[in-house]
Structure formats: structure tokens, C-alpha cells
Image 1 (spheres, helix red, strand yellow):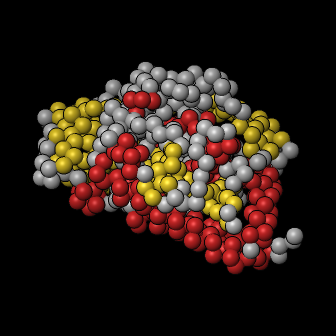
Image 2 (image 1 turned 90 degrees about the vertical axis):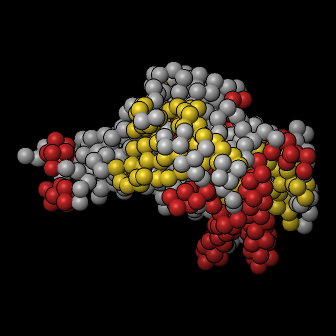
Image 3 (image 1 turned 30 degrees about the horizontal axis):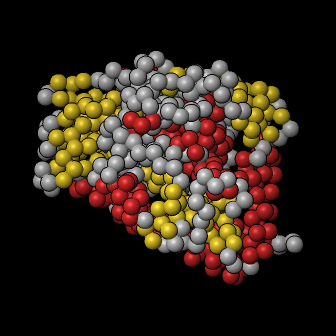
Length: 560
């Protein structure tokens, strides 16, 4: 069967639209601000044979591109060998086990078989960041966990919905192990409803074009995505490209972790070798294999954004399994920081390795931290507990054409920080500052973008604060002579005294009373090119706008 180009393009757009509508439905119906406002979620369509990615929503988190296909593949394998109950129409599985193709425990995945004529045509799946899944600290980001059990409830694949009906017994087990459990039903129903929207929309496409035509289109789109990625990989001169990126610490041992990367370019394909990276760590900065693979894929998506989102785009990319390193975590290693932080250090290593080979496509390092800040406690005014989860943006790296974006979303996603007004309405907090972190962008011909400077006060009740961030010890790397961006900064004021966490960007169980404050400065992006080559007019404009003082500009850009 030969599909004409117009039909192929229409089906490709249609599959993308199905995923986009699932994303939109999920966010609109969700209860938690981290999903409803920050869009920390993703939806996609996956192969019934091996779980490979067919399509994903354009507004979904890129880090889920790889993990959701591995999670779906694992589910299919477990059903095949009898470890998981076989599905029926209307069944929806829930799973958050990091070691089964996942990320961290807070990223909860739903998967639903999509049937045509009594056979599974494909799988619909989504992931949503739940604000709490139990564990040692509210929000799940335990900065000093030494085993995954301390991070929360770990769910193997089980059918949460059986033939369309919620299994109340399984749901009660989940609710008995998480905080603010009474609020989770809104997110659960939103997550399931998004899959049902996808089912309805996908049926329309198949009814219009026919199952065989759509199957052929999916196969052809995968083949074309592979060819396009190979063509892009040939832009990289054959050879070996190396880089090193650092994680501040694992939260337990106050020493940096190294990500050592060698990229071998040959015959239109790339091989990624992490040999020499640090060994598995005690704290929660280990990365499961699915997240490590997905981090490489998302980095290449940043470099070649025009390649369609399909499993074919990953075929020319080979990631050697980083056995014996913290990038290949096995049970019971803690992993809460893998998707949110380590993944971004992996992407940074890819950027740093390829920037000289592709100076017109690769940027200096971005902020590379999701700024995970969880605040959990009791609100006496509402007589209920709460778990607040704050993510934040940072500066993007400068590039060949222009300065980096300021306060952009993290490398791994298109999620955004929830509006201050929503957070103050939902939780007993007051924001005293929410502004650009002036002076944080790394100097260069094209400077890095600026991070965010915010300060929160607890108004009433009591709470504990926890952080799992990064780039507190080392700022985002500059490129081609550019300077590093400013590192992450955390300061806690308790009873009028200011405290800086020992691990700089990682801490947990910090008690807060009314009037206590937390101030966070997120990293600025790295600079691109030599600072002395920057246009003086651009320096003057930055000074005029208060982005740098005259003294800072003189020191950073060598201006007298």
C-alpha cells in the first residue's frame, strides 16, 4: 500500500491532535496546580506490539518521550508472561515503579488498551505528577533518602479501572499511603478522562481512513523520522566528542557526581558512552535506565526539533548501558531526583559535547533545574493538611544568534510555574518576591538568560520545607569562551536567622513557623562566545534595564 503525501500528513497531524486534546483535557480537569496550572503531564499513543512511541502531545514533557514507551513496553511484556492480569476493554492500568520504565514515584502513569474489532490496536498512556505519593517528606522529594521506600508508595502495574469502573479497594490502598488523599480523586478522574478523550478522537481518525491505512501511515512516519534523524546526524563530522557535567551532590554525601560522556559520530548514527561516570550514589540522585535514555533523546530533540516525535527518531541513537554508574539505578536505590535534575545534567553533557561540532544549533547550558520545592503542613484556617509543590524556571544558554531566554521552563519539559495568585489562594503562603534574578546570566558574546528570584513566607500553621534542586555548586556551563551562569541559591529564614542548606540545593524536613521565609534564586544560563566580543550597545541596554550594574558589566564583559 502506498499512501499519498497529503493523506500521510493529515494522519500525522491527526495523531498529534489526539495527543494534544488528551493533554488539554488532563490539565483542564485536574485538581492539583502542578498539573492544572503547571502542565506537569504528558499523553501519547504507543504500539500494541512493543510499546514504541507513535505520537505524543506537543505540550507534554519531553522527558516522558522515552520513559512512557519503555513503561508501556514493560507492561506489554508483563502481560505476555502472566505477571500482570490481561486487559479487557475499559481497563486502565496504573504504575509508578521507577525500575519498570519510569522516572520517580511522583510521576504516575496510566495506560489503557485501545481496541478495534476486539483486538488491541495500540495503547493510550499518560503521566501526571502527583503532588504526593507518601514517603518521608511531603511532596516525595526526600533529599536524603537512602532507599526508594523512603520516597513513597511504589506501584507495580495493576488495573485501577476494571472495565471502566474504579477499583475501590486498590484506590483505598493508594489513599491510605499518601498525604491529602481526599484531593487525589480529582487528578485520578482527570487522568482517566484524558485517555477516554483520546479513545474517542482516535476512533474518529480510524473510522475515516480505515485501520489498514492508519497502520501503514504509522509505519511510514516511523521510517521517515529515522531517515530525518540520520540526515541530521550526518551534519556532525565523524569523530568522538567528549564532555563532563556535574551534579552538586546526592543529598547524603556532600561531594559532586560526574557525568562523563563520549559521543561517537559515524555513518549517520550516534553512540553515547557514559563510561567513567560516578558509581551509584547513596542519595536520591540515581537515574533509572529509562530516564537516562530519555534524557539523551530529549537533548537531541532540543538540537534537532524538526524531527517528528516518533520512535523512529531514536533508531540512529545508541546509548550504551551505563552499568555500574548512578545512571543505571536498580532497586532499592532512591531516585526522586532522576527525572527532575539528573536528566537535565545528562542533556547538558550532550550539549557541551556537541556545541563545537554544531555551533549554529547547540546552545550554552541552560539552568537545568526544575527547582523542586515542596512545602507540607497543616492550615488551621481551613482545618486541613496541604502539600504545596513549586517548580520554577531559569535562564537558557546563549546561542550563536542571540541571548538566552530568561526564566524559561526546565530542559525536560514545557511545564510552567503555577501562577503566584493560584498558589496564595490554595496554600497558606505569601510571595514577597517573584522577579528576574538580575545579573545571573553568564557573560558571553551572547549572554545567558536570567533566572528567577522568589521569596515565600508561611502565613499560618506549621510546615516543613524540602528541596531537591541542582546547580548550586556549579553554574550552567558557558560555551565557546562564554562564562558560566550563576549557581542556584537557597536561603531559609527561621526566627529571623538566615540558614543556607549544607548541600546548597538539597535539604529536607526544614521546620517553618508563621513568619519564616524561603528565598530561592534559580540559575542563569551559560554565556555563548567570548564576553569581550559582545556588542557594547547590548551591554548598555542591559545596564539601562537593570539586568547588570555598571560595575558588574565592567567585571563580566571587560568593559572600562
